[in-house]
Image (cartoon, rainbow, N blue to C red; front, side, top):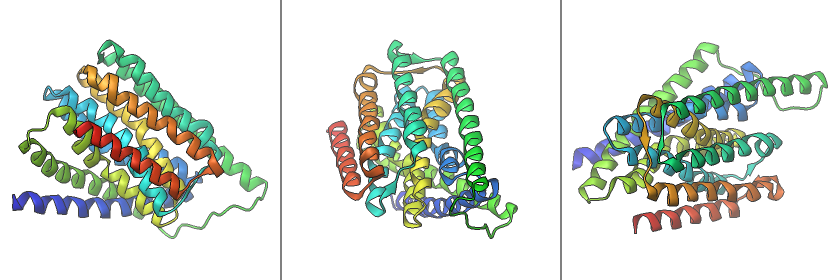
Length: 315
């Protein structure tokens, strides 16, 4: 018992350090590549913080626990846009760029709707996994190219734009990203393993573990990264990380997992949890549209929604 508690705190410490390193490295890479921090959050940071979900989902599917695999992804997406976005906004209001409204949110909602339509047959197979991966590749190429074009236009028009010079070498930036990703990976693994053991000792069913314990545990990298970004006023990175993580969770994690092994979807997840995911994603839109920022009151609303959802699942 004491060893599990110790591992729990070691995992949390690794997550905090990993999030800090990942924010430092990715912000510097954004300046170096002349792309916006939002795009880095939607790609490099989102994928790095989604590694725990990928590991858990693949392990669960191969072990014959599809409710853990699917519940982990759905629960993480709800956690990202309710609890984590809420906490980040309470720390520091998150200002919303036009691209977040016209590209990133529609992509997040579209991925969620596509998943809902495809899983109505009761499973996600390899063909659907290939479709998910293909859509993700097209999306990443599009946003990176668009960001580079937009940044070039700004420079050519000599408009005022806050682009501080990076003080790090490329090797140091990459080292930060690798160390950060490693810290998030191992930290989440240690934290989730300890928390999952406690949950199973209490006799909680797999779906509830996936939706709550695993979802919160594997979302800790997003939580740490986004809150660190909020404290550092890198709000573009915080918002991009969360929406990008939701997109990656569906398109890459379920895509890769279903290619390796078909994922069965229970009726409860289909008719309850995915509906909650769609609802939370929908609620975020008017909050983003109001004054073009997610403020502290909005963050509190999102956090209360997540608390209520978790209460209904556990109860």
